[in-house]
Image 1 (cartoon, rainbow, N blue to C red):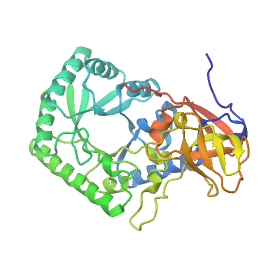
Image 2: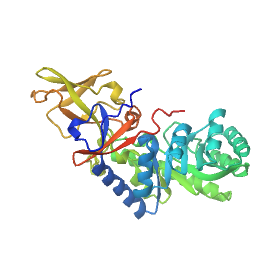
Image 3: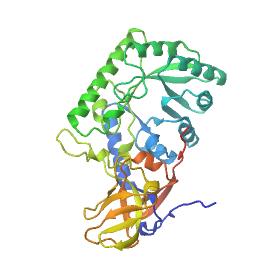
Length: 373
């Protein structure tokens, strides 16, 4: 079986096999430092989201250099991979209801601090039974729906009812609220995005007040993503951010505008799908080796980094079509593609090829690739 590694340490960037995930370490490190500075200045915690990077190496770097307190994961198998990679503080920012997955979650709590989201009274009983069976404590956040329209119970009294049941359940600990407005993250218009988050903040604050009236304190009030973190982070309601994409920055996030109507540019593109021109038989177009199987296009076609003279216009399984009106591209020429959506793009690769000053400095495995249970 081939190991399928696209590069070796010290290799020139021009010699890397494609398509592959290319990580610009300098840009990545600047992004991490910038978010870390914001978190520290605002007295927050940051739990970096592993669904974005799926890498134990990146999780470790974020905790060491970026000041993160642990990781978020969306699936139990993803959390298991992060714990096996050395992380000892994991939030599964999702509901876990399958009996087999609850068993695995409880077993994982013997190896690390485990927090999970809950939005159903019956799920509390199942989590409690598993925690007692394994002799562990599972911490629980009540997830409230603050506008995303996905998981989460209604803010206010319904959330308090679940929190009270958690607080009384053997083997469980009420730890706070999960209040993530996912729908707002990619809303381009600043005023619209801000209004959505202000509603989320108000719903969250109201729920916290009702919990306090019942004697329940929230150690964690969690949410926020790359598109809105400044709003939640300065609200004095949220105390834990869950941003992930900021470290990479995909094309869709860069279409979001700030309060002045300008495109967001506070974070740099650091992650690319590195591709090669594999065919150049037509003067006005080129074909590259990064198609549908090399990236997610759910948020649109990728953008070619640093180029305005050529444009990626469509793709099939193994081919990308590039518009080349000036006939400037050459056979085997390398290009950096900014994925429209970094999370599902990362999930199709085994390795990050990490480069600095034109050479490969490190190879980081995508530890939790395909771990979607």
